[in-house]
Length: 98
Image (cartoon, rainbow, N blue to C red):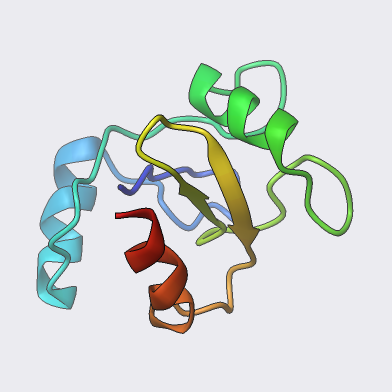
């Protein structure tokens, strides 16, 4: 699932419709939700939960776009991956949780 956020270098300034149209050219097939905040007082509850359960190297905040959280079927966060980590690099972890 993807959650657009404009808190990282203002990289996603568009509307939800504009963002969803933009990602089509990249072949995005995962669910893309409306733009939210992931850090600070306005952070969406899902990111407050994820950040509280799995802290990163520099604390709980999300440092940059494309941070990934792997959760099990019950929604329990299992592992956190930084932006440069390709989802394919932890495919075996995903398969185990299926």
